[in-house]
Image (cartoon, rainbow, N blue to C red):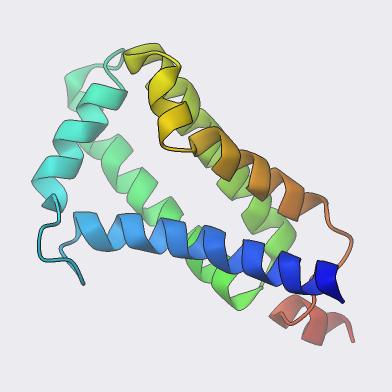
Length: 137
């Protein structure tokens, strides 16, 4: 029972992390959010090794992926795929941060922990209190 509760908490925490980031860049819910322009600048800094003309595409792709993954995780639908997607996306983000800033930055922002949590969620055999559970019952 405790593992069921922990897996739901993990699923919701990952979803909330993605939704909070998206809400900030879209100026939803937060007064002092960086907004889309700030996110584009940050995306360029994190991906300093990419050509500048790719940055808007990377920013839009990340935002769409984060939104879709957050909704899937929140609902508990296609949870394993969403968790693997979240793990991969955040691992790529952590590596990009490490290349551009050094290892301290992704450690300070717990990006590796977020990725590891998503990999852990993907490894679970079932997902209690989810749409996935309803579909397999």
